[in-house]
Length: 122
Image 1 (spheres, rainbow, N blue to C red):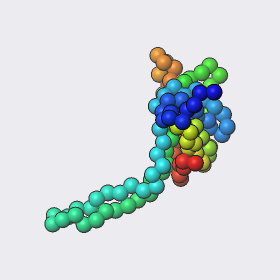
Image 2: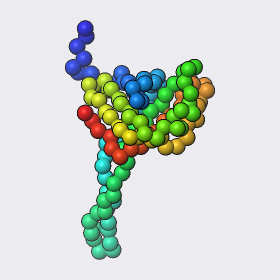
Image 3: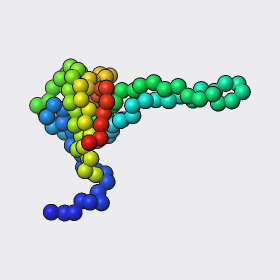
Image 4: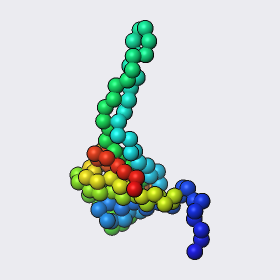
């Protein structure tokens, strides 16, 4: 077997509640817990405000023949798991889809965005 200890990017897998989907590309995730905004006055920087943000996983998937795209719009409490080329696993639990899904028929692809309370690197 080939040694992959130096591999950082490339091959990736995505599954939702244990079902694997064809990943066409553009897989991303956000593990940030807070967003900060600098607060400035007319005289100086005063500090910052902080508010919570949702965890997020995004993917461009392939519309395979046996797939029902509408099922993605109905997802409201799913576990999304990513297996990355660098050996990292990323998990989002109790996630829901946001936005609607539009299939681009030239490449048979559509984009999905899940949000949830947190996304973790495990």
